[in-house]
Each structure stands twice: as C-alpha cells, then as structure tokens.
Image 1: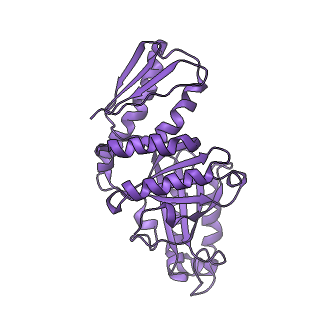
Image 2: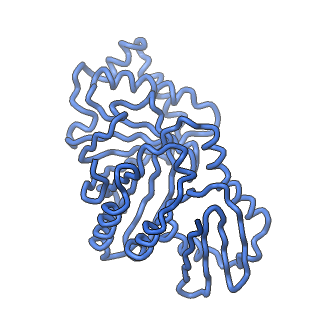
Image 3: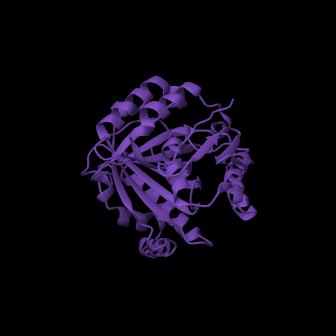
Length: 316
C-alpha cells in the first residue's frame, strides 16, 4: 500500500514523497530513491510534523547525496529490521515527543483526543502525558506512548484513514516532534509493570551508559530492584533500554505513582540502604552505588515528571 505526502518548505520548492516500504525524496524533479526494509520505522504522524524541519537543516540537493550519506540512512533503517529478527520475544514501547505551536495547545489536545478516540482502540493503544517540570513544560510538551508492542509492529500495515486524519487535523498544530524512540522493557528489572494499571503521574530518569563493560551498572540496578520489591511492594517501576532511535546505551527508568509525596509507594519494611546491606552484605550499597555511578556519562542524568492525560489516551 502506497502512502504519499507532499511537504512544502516555506522558502524552497521542495517536495517530499514517502512510501512504505520505499522512500522517495523529490527535489525539483530529481529523485533519490531508497528501498527500506522497515515499514514502520517511524509513526507516520511524527514524520508529518518533523520532516519539514529536518529538510530545512540542509540546503544540499538530495539528488547529489553522496553514497556515504545513503549508507548512513540505510544502516539506520536496517538496524530496526535486524533488531526485530534477533529479539522475537521483546516487549517494545514506542515513544514520541511533541511540542505544539505557540498558542495551539488546546487545538492540539482536541485533535489528539479525537484521533485517539477514532483510531487508538485497545489493539492499537496510545497513552498521552504532558511534561510538568523544566523549561520545556512552560509552553507545553507532550509524550505519546505506544505501549506493549511486539516485533510485529515493524511490519503492520498503515491505516490510510489514520494517516490522513493526522495530516489534516493534528500535524498543523505541531511545532516540532521527536521520535520514534523504540524501547525494550527489561522485565526482570520491572516491578508491578506486567499489567496496564494507569496512574496519575510518572517520573522518567534517563541514564546514558559509557561504552564498555557495564556489569557494575546492571548489578546495582538488579539488586536495587530486589530491595525495592521488598521494602515498597506497591512500587510501579519499569526499566527500558533504547533499541533504536538514538544512543542504544540509553536506559530509561520509569516510576508510576498517584501520590507525589510517595513516588515509590509507602515504605513497608525499613530503610532501603539498610535493607540493601542486609541482603547483600555490609557496605555493599556504598560500593555498588559508586560503581553504578561510574558507568554513567556525567551529563546524562535528566529527570522528568509527567502527568498522564486519560482524556487524550486509549480507554483501558
């Protein structure tokens, strides 16, 4: 099935046509065609809202793209196919980030709500949240999550009606978009995350690991998860590693909660550090935590708080 969209830059006569599984880029009658093995590398609506911005970054003629640039893009797309083949049992969470145009938040939300109602039923669920903290939250920033996908997501057919609706009703309100980010949930490091249990808020911690052996990072996280499960059994924690869309050394830790004063749930059984040392030996928390921190790139420690928007999400 061919899907096409014409995007016109404000100051350039540039036409961009996209089709799956092929991608065709057209500029002034010259064509650069790349056959992609990956049908749904990006959610179509994200592409609608961000492709023009990407094109504006460069003034080169697409017909003069060098082979090395072709190979970079080809490798980027092919990596998704390779990942899908090698991780047949993975649970994937696909995320996108959107910033509406100034003064268009209400119209953006209304359009998202209608799109979700029409096209995001339980079998194609989507969850929307709004950023609560940081400078980006002032003008409104939204995260759109497609939870619990399997590798079949890569090969599912696109809905023409869904695509047209996004293009005609949602994309016009979007200033910028990021994604798709494809995250694999690490199930043995998650707590109470197996079932869909919506909360009011979630906190997102991003950690980018250094290249090399990160055994110390994962050992601490595994032990900490066991401690947390014992001390705060009501905690909802999800741990994810980025599979595609960016630096694959990126780890995301999500904590879902209803009470901002108890993000990890009420403590049932003592102090976390004391329990850690009790379970794994005196002084192990200090040693493990130091080694854990040494494996994280120093600048990569952002924390974001989000509020879930049930009115913009699939009804579970």
